[in-house]
Image (tube, rainbow, N blue to C red; front, side, top):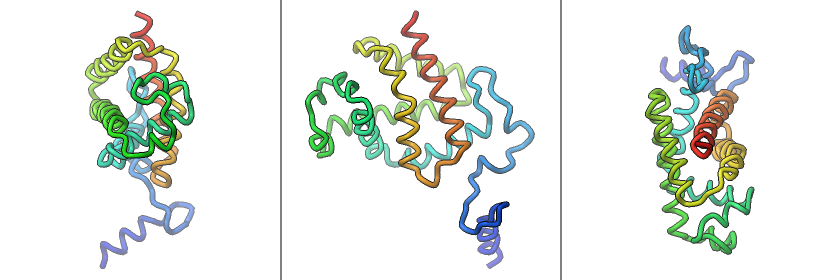
Amino acid sequence: MGGLLSVAWGWVTAAGKAGSIMQPEEGSLGPYADVPDKTTGLTLRHRTAIYRTWDLVRPNVKLHGPNFFRAMFEAEPILQTRFKSFIGKTKEELKKDNKRLVAHGTTVFMAITSLVDNLEDVPVLVELIKNTANNHIRHGVPKEDFEMLPPILLKFMRDTLGSAWSPVAEEGWSQAVKVIISVILSVYDE
């Protein structure tokens, strides 16, 4: 019973509203919680929010991956033309059980999983991002396409996670995506 009361009490925020859940990244994470990494600019608080939110997406990459691509194609239709298998497909055709879309979306979200899993190993993180850039260069993807992705990914995460999305998650993901895009563009410019 005491544990139940502790959990219920934890739902009461400083503002005194019951039902609001404080996310782990909003609490005390120690004296270095807000010290940014010199390379990525991500703090422990940011990384905690990224891990927590991706852990909500990770179990369902087979659902979320294709949904992200549908959202991306709707936001920036030009991006659909970069995929031979999806050129000319209607929204309805992409909503159906499109195995290629599921496969590609799953592959991309597993790649994001690798990035998230290596946030604290920056040299490996950078190499993973460079590999992604080189794969896209080989497929003739223009670098400008990557500049369109940050707002689409952030909106997708915000919409998908709803109340589980926090201001710290927004900050952390924004910074992480900024770093990812920066590394990708630097590979294009080499």
